[in-house]
Length: 424
Image 1 (cartoon, rainbow, N blue to C red):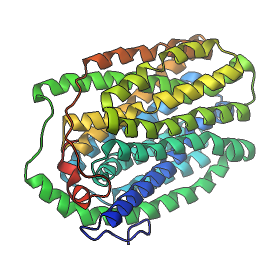
Image 2 (cartoon, helix red, strand yellow):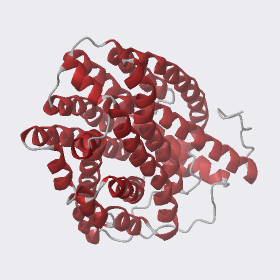
Image 3 (cartoon, one colour):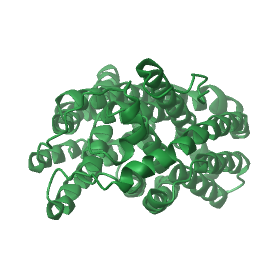
């Protein structure tokens, strides 16, 4: 049996293979939801922490910087290591760090204890994301964009749930009620342990494929650093904007419109839920029409809406954030899959680099924007960040990759066995 309760596929049985692969992806997405919902509690309770410990916006930015930089530094290192030495059960350790971060945050008695909790949560993500992203690709059956989007939508949904859970549980009853969410961490550890068993069973098959050396590079290797640089600039655009919304949107709403903390947290949930909904579209459309088109739409396409948002009333602000979330969300799966197509066979390193970069950029952005908010206002922060999507013009420098034509889909057990080393 698979960790999702679906019978493990008999080679050659297409329906069983499709169901098992989809079951693995759904279970992995659910674990991503649990992991990221725990970590989303931290920014969701920033107003509570600010009042409890009398923090400045710069100190709030430093909390995020600590969380994100730990993830940023360790994710590519862990991804590079697990490319060579896969660790099927490392996801359990990652969830364990997230659990420890929750306990530390609930019991923190001062600002430095909060920083320690943020660091432990960051380490949990650093361990979780590279190997889980590789596992999603292994179960993709060649539909890399769909698999990555399904995996990502779990994380985005978890991030969206953070403010909602904080609003109904923590804000109303106190910070120590974070301890209830350790049950979520335990549930996640049980699921990823069973996923690790599935992954262990497929390691020998993956190594057999990789040892054949039949890896196709879609562009000259000399061009890869330049193209990766373009993708990193696009990531900068996405995650600086996302950081401004995730960390300061609640303060923006309270300062500009005078809404209460629970009301602002609910509107943040609406934005993050839109991000979750938009994620799945990017991978599916990318599989059908190409990654470059999705990148064009997902970053540059939201520019008009982002530029309008700081000048709208409360109703239209909420509406525009939904539109921005839906459009922006498809960028990361498309960028990540595009990058793995540039360097096939390096899924862990690429996933670690890009997840780590996402964490690092978000952390740096939070610290910089916190300083700016202290010196001016949160409203100006949102206005400045509204110009970031224009960086999407750099997409013009990306080539259209010539993708292999697949006669298989998620049902193909052969693709499930050998996918890791194959190009997109």
